[in-house]
Length: 233
Image (cartoon, rainbow, N blue to C red; front, top):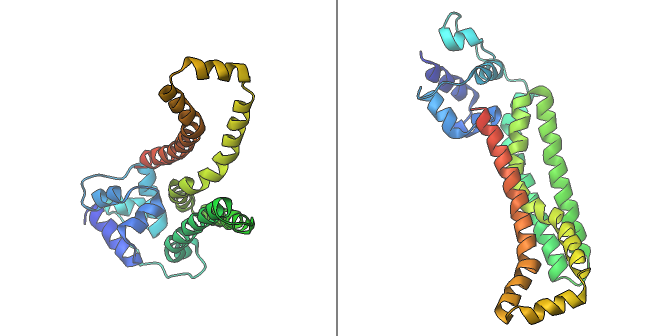
């Protein structure tokens, strides 16, 4: 039996999909697929993680020098069972909470006559982030790979919905700095620049800078998390 066949057998005994195993180990689904078809071999750290997760020995995985142990009995209070059952559902719920929280904030800010939707949106957003972070830390206490993978999966998506709340005060600070520009300088620019060029400058200052700040934060976090995942391949 090859290493890929062993991984398939162990994964199916646990009732896991390739995506579930990838999230657990902090790698991509394509990496798991290549392992199972023997197109690639896991590195040492992933071999150890596989052995610990499936309760087998690294010697059995790599060299067949020990018989395959019996499948471990399911323990309802172990972190692995909880992760398998609750992780995908909780990930979807917390991300949905972030989306709904941002929508409520936007509705309260632009359309509502009261601040109640904005307050409710902030509470929902903070609660979703706290729940996801707390669950990820809980998984980390039992299995560091599972917790890190969950937190990374959450933030790769949630950063696009949380960043507007963080970037908004920075945008207000930027607008406050613009108001400190002397009126004489603004008048000189108004007279010196052609009207189309002036409109472009105003658009870039008032809309382009906050948008670039938002995209920079989101892309930085997403790329940083993706780079961490690639290091585990």
